[in-house]
Length: 566
Image (cartoon, rainbow, N blue to C red; front, side, top):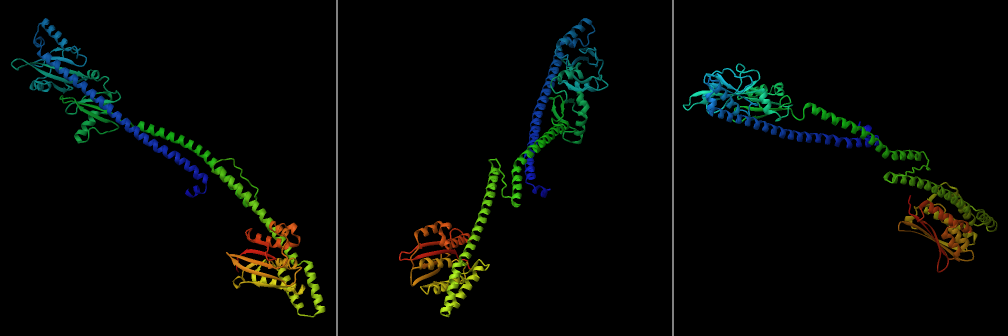
């Protein structure tokens, strides 16, 4: 996979866009879910605690008010007298007083007044008297024993209907601390529903348990969740009562000193369904983002790689030899600059190739012209004519010298080698000057100064001969006992060849034409132009031939080349 990606810049760029777009999205999504979950859980916890406190306060307030009313009933002589009265008028009077005392609480509790034998005498229940209660055990027994407090007990099945949940009792004592009756308070499921209405969310379970963790009252949700059973099992196992089980978190608070507990069971804010839904939303967002990223990455990668592909195609055409190819990008960014540089490069290469072809043609023309100059018919004719007359008139050794020198010059001129050693070049020039001395009856002399360390330097062949020829023919043509001096030396890693003559010097017009390198106008000095052209084409424009007249007479021609040894 890694190898496949690295083979394509577009694929690498495409993957980079997707990773850069998706990774922050996934990380941000998970972070937001965590933060949202923590925030909602905290808010949910606070809200639940507020509900629990509200329920606790409401229930405690009800129990306190119930105990207060029970004390008023106990201290009311009319009601207490009505316990044992058989007279209907007094009985009705006691009922009336009981209803007056309990008028604010009748919707949330039923009040009964029992005699000392456990027989109900007065009652606010819609069903009338509640029957009998045992006085030797159960609720009334405990109430008699603890006469100074309200005793609350979970209603037993034998003593109540299915709707009865909680009973409270308080013993009525006379001035001799003798029990003359009991005040009993009954609370049914309907009463608890009325008390707790609006104090909690209906989808959450709420239950009231006694000190034995038996169910006193439970809402439908609490019954379905079996809150009492779960907590009782945990308490017996010594486990944490509040911990979450089966998706329900329990909130527990005691109801004052009543021995009862209020239990609020709530599902966590992030239930499995909510979590699944959240994950589903994130997945949908991720898929949508992925599709968007793929589209955007595809468009962007194509936008960025299109000029690269265009450049690659152009390079392939250049490799095939097509130097006329142009990318021609209209972009202003780095790709546009790269395309412009490529176009400039191909134009420069084309111009350089054309220049090289032109230079090679000029070099070939100069070499041909040099050979023609070296083998010009006039020189050969004069040389051969001289040899003829010398041979007829004198029968002297000069004939052998001229023939030998001419042979060496011709052999070197027609050889394929373009470069020869400096010592060989000087030897050929000396042979040429020996021939010319014989031709001109010794009217000039020459000297050559060549350091030994420069003899092995390589130079283009026959570059000194045209200069010497110009000095003999033009410089010394009207002078007897002329002299030519060739001085060769090295200066700043540059080979310098200077040819001096003490003749008539060079015309200023010719010097100007040499400086301008005007081939057409040089005519008889074309050898100068050819030598300068060959040197410049081989070594560069910083080298070449320079001519000047000397103040004491004559001319000096200076040739510069790089020092190149074998």
